[in-house]
Each structure stands twice: as structure tokens, then as C-alpha cells.
Length: 388
Image (cartoon, rainbow, N blue to C red; front, side, top):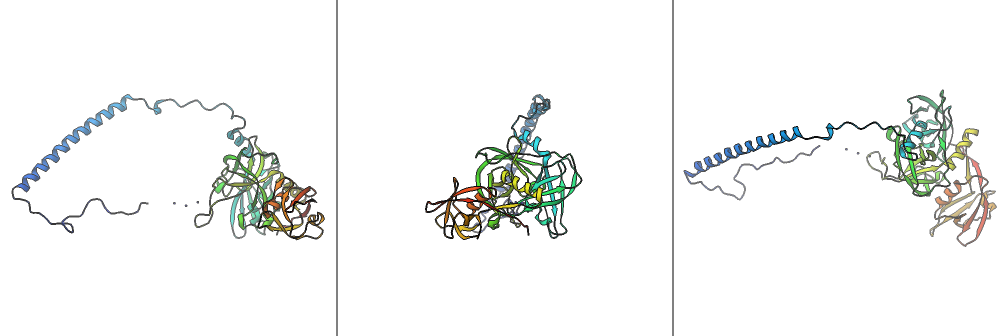
């Protein structure tokens, strides 16, 4: 996102004669008389104008003294009623105490993002890209809570492929804990609220709707690798840099997603744009499984089909290679096959297949439809993520 007046020519005209004009001599005796008449007229105009101005000022003053303005009315009574259930106000009152600003400093840069509390003693879910800079040696993370408390935080574990991380704030207790919802029953048009710290403005609340579901999105935008594709919730709630890692919640104040990415035309010298009403969140069902594994083991497991894919020219996901011993080979998939559906979900690109697989858990059974109308059954596998 970017910010007087330009100089201009003065008003009026320079003294004549002007190019192409000639001075015409005035008849003697008329010039002085004409000038006198003009002067007299000017004085008369000023006198009349002054009288009119005085009269106008008198009328205005008289009107002001007799009229009643909004400034004379008493202030209304303070709001005493509780916020209506399901309103943005009620959601904000419930969720704000659970949202955290994360200030991150690495060896070469610093930044900030958001997170939300999942345990009273300081466990916080956020995005991997928010805290990644602190993952190397010498990095620091500071958690800033809504009540003004601050605490250093350490990384419990992170998964770059799902862009989910868990950190632990040190020396805190009795924190307000988020209520987690579910994302498998979301509907397009459903009202949602996003909370976070855009541009370091902590505790910022925005609202909107679910604009679309099952939107394949790469963490880091199109420059991100296929390994980071998520099966995103799209929303028009304003999300900006700094919102990353904060909660997207429903009207019950339950977390249904983690705000992670935005589409924004690049502007300005930094190439960092703002919200244009297209934001993306990781569904909480997927993030919950990943975060639970991180809390219990320090590592996350990625769901895999055991194939590499690329876009097919006529639509679908073209299988370029099959991993020996993987789920794809077990299902009978071969290089050159084109996947067009996973269960009832249409697959129109390679990223769509990756996102659909990521939305499942290791061990889930799925039906794949191929371009030649064959169907195969696959039991999805899992592999431990080792962050670099």
C-alpha cells in the first residue's frame, strides 16, 4: 500500500500590449472623466457591498442565536444491553482474548503475525511462515496477549507443507482458550469473522462471508511449491499482512480456519499489497490434525498418494511418476493416467488433486476416477515432515 500541491501559473494577465494587439490612443479629456466615473462606480459598489455584508452578518448572527443544533441535545444513555448473539460484536468479545500477536526476529530480518491460544499454559497455533525466520539459530519470538502481557515463545514443531506451526509461550497461565469448530460443514455465503494483527494493528476485527470452498492455494502464492498446496477456505473478510496465523471464526466464535494467504496485486516499492477481498484460510479440520501431532510428537505427518503430478492440457491431474510401494502403485495407477475426480470432487488441475489428498488423513480410503472412466480404490499413506 502508498502518499502537495504542484506549482502553477499565477492568476491574472501580464501588462499589455499583447502579441498581435495595438494600443488605441484615448481621446483627450475623456480618459480622465471615464476613469473618474469608474472610480466613483467602484466606491459605490464597495459601499453597497459593505452594507449588504453588514446586513447579512446581522441576519446570520440573529439566526444563530435563535436556532437549536444537535450540539444542544444531551448525549444518549450508554449502551447497557449485551451484544446480540451471533453478531460481530458478540464474536469479537468472545474471541479477542484468545488472539495473540507474535513478534518474530531472525538473524537477518524481523516480522510479525498472529496466532490463537489452544491451552491455558501457553500453547499457540500459528502459520509456519510467521515463525519460520526464528527456526534457525538465534531467532526470537515474543507473544503479546490482548491483556497486555508479553512472554518469550519457543517453537514446539512446524509443518511447512501445511503451513501450520505450534509455539509455546513461557511462564504464562490462566490464558483464555479458543473454541475450535469444524470446517467440513461450511457453506458458501456463511458469515465469518477474522481477527489478527494486520500491519502491527493488534486486535483488529473484520467480517465477511465464506466466498468459496476447496480452493487449491499455494502458501506463498504462485511462487510457492506444490508441496505447500492447501485446500483453502476463501473469504472476503479483510485479511492483510500480519493477519497470518490468526483465527477465522464462525458466528458462534468457533475457529473454523487459520488465515494464511491473500490474493493481492503487488503495489509499491516493496511489492506488498493489501486486501482486495480475496483471502484464504487453512480449514481447521486439517490444521487440527497437524497441530495435534505436533503437540504430541513434535512432528507432523503429511497425507500422500505416492505419485507426482502435473497439469494435463485437457484438464485433470496427469500422473508423471508413481512412487514404488506407495498408495498410488497399490491402487494400480501408472504414469500417464489422468485423474479427473477424487470421490465426488472434480479434479481440474494437479494442485486440485494435491489439495484434495491433503484434506484427508493417512489411512483414508478414496475412489479415483480416471479420464478413461476407470475407477480405482486407494488407501492414502503418510510421511513424516522434516522441516529444513
